[in-house]
Image 1 (cartoon, rainbow, N blue to C red):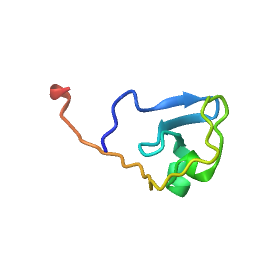
Image 2 (image 1 turned 60 degrees about the horizontal axis):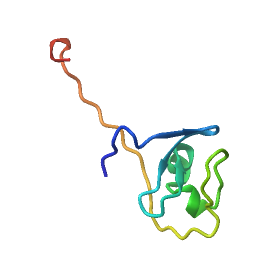
Image 3 (image 1 turned 120 degrees about the vertical axis):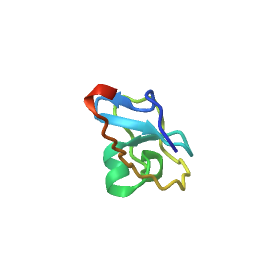
Image 4 (image 1 turned 30 degrees about the horizontal axis):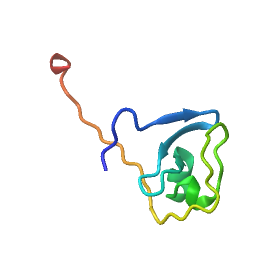
Amino acid sequence: MELKSDALHESRDGYYFDCPECGSPATIDNIIEHGRCNGYLDEQVEGIDFDVENKSCSAVLRLEMAYTSAPETER
């Protein structure tokens, strides 16, 4: 799934995405460390009005960074 520019959100605790399966916040730390969203891990994100309690989610998440290099004249 390719993310759009508005896919990244900011909270008091850091940055997060919306889980594509259950909609709960998926903090970058939890994606990297566990491969799961906060709904699966049952971890509330401070400052976000979303109740992750009793969320059923089977999504396995990962982040991938893509890189391309273009000559200065093409930018």
